Length: 551
Image (tube, helix red, strand yellow):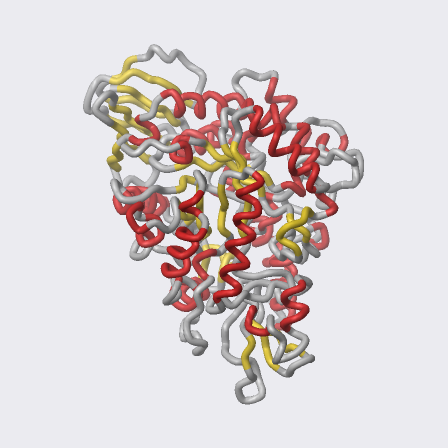
């Protein structure tokens, strides 16, 4: 058991635009985080992952960076950032920032130079190609709909953008580009941050530029965009140049990373990354046409993904345990029951997150059970992904009503509505109209109401995080998946030489029986009740009930 802080820590992810607005301009900011720092600390988390706060024109809400060494004016100043870091350190909190190294903004000075002339020294900072048969260089599609190539009028060539056309991909083949990224990392680490979440790091190494033969976009991601021929060479170099010189944490966002190749990224003796976010469970309901082509998800498959990854990483690498973030729907709406059993299933998902092996990630608002939002008007949404998909749909005369219903289920803005602090106007997020509307259910679901209720989702998150911290078996202990083919129960054991725990989740709206193999004592559960209860033989679980039992 190699004990390190980032394995034992619980990460709280902040999407700053939607967290808290300190100056009442409708946009969350760094001072807003400072004002709520004691609230974050009260959750029991140790690490904050802060989504991008760098200078950006905001085509993709900060993931299009125009200056990596400056703070976006909407969010505040570098002085504000330094104060945030100081206040966090006072409270024993660590800060992990987003590293966006696959692409920049088209307003970054590198790209402005690059596009100006084929002879510019920065030309090969990006990927430029000639047209083929008077069209784009190949058939690659953007993650955000449409072709992944944009014509540059100045030089008559196309540049690659796997995301929006304002996010040109960097050319990692160029050693100068790699050095620029390493220097940026050192700049922030030397300021005192504690690591990086690396945006779409799995796609930085490009293959040859042949057409993709795959009709299913997820297959294109896995086989064409991700896991390119030099990805591990680049990550090893990054580790040697930067990561090995700091006590830091790294987690790579890994579209296209699978069980087959995942260990290469995180195996400890390879010295690349500490963890990755794979998306096996996050793409589970995506059809052949992508996220807005929604399939019912298979619960047996969902369970198997967690079990298979645990087996793969055991004794060799480390995992990330997450169910949602700024790019996915709200977890209680997606994997729980956000209607009749809203509170129980929100607590159940908290129990699941904190009882598996790997570092736990909690996305802002999930700790109060925030739900998806269903705006009636498509224009109330703000996400570039939604509007690009809508534009493509209209070009094919698609069904817009059906698309809006899909956005209600899968749109990224579900996770981006402002945090619901109280039942006052704009959910207490801001005195001004927020950049995106608040979820109308804020009068029922908010921090203030839950603070004073000992049985609330919020106080349960505090309790389950504390339980995890006080029982290292939940962090490092072994894992065994029981009843793998059961369609509604998720049951597993966690144990080490000191303790054995049985964790049972009923992912259904019916009561279900389970036969115990031993006598157990209930340690924590998502229904109120006596924790001294002893169980043996057959037991009955209530709808959406979770409990952790100790042998």
